[in-house]
Length: 292
Image 1 (cartoon, rainbow, N blue to C red):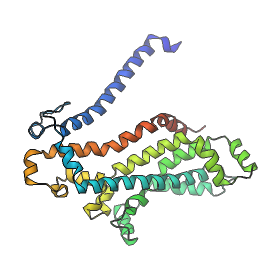
Image 2: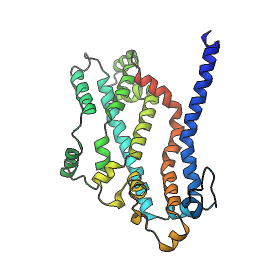
Image 3: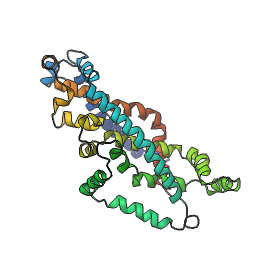
Image 4: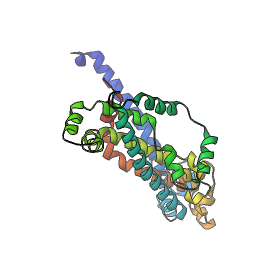
């Protein structure tokens, strides 16, 4: 058998070593950030911290968790992620179900498919998008961050291909029993499509949680920033006015440790959600991306 040959065994060893190296390279930066967040001010500022804290203390986390602006940003980030995921998944499921029908069940299907694909390839640009959001009076609201990203065409295509792989006999049996399209979607397609739904939901959550540029574009009040935008202003723009610094605290707490603590806290929600969806991840991608 081919899997017992020396070449295949050598390839397997090389493949596992390469994947292990990639995994380590992904984990080490997070471990370093965690070590810096638990370190004292002097070694953190001197770049002496590696993968283990030096001068262990919790002052950075105390400062972060007592910061009202950080609380507001964290809540706004969670609100955006929850609303964006629920609204986006609802719209994409409805669109994917309709577009998964053939020409006999949905005569105008091809026109709508091309309409969605056109929006995936071309966009109006930043200036027209900004003017649209402003004219709709959505500036400084959570809807300016949620509605423009409600439909992700790539994710919708994955769901559509998954729905097209569902046996037609199940839908026909449901229709014969008197169920309509909404009942068929809820009772037949959604339970079967849980791997794809979990995978696309994870993609959508990560997209909303990590998105920071639209917050800078559409939100002018920093107290309404989602967490990613808030961290961008602190870490990249070096604007420390939003963390309410105190002169005496700055002597004992390094801004590097505080920023590291904020970064690590910001990654926790996705890290906590991912293990519950991981078992669906690979299966959902394979079944949603392959069409016979």
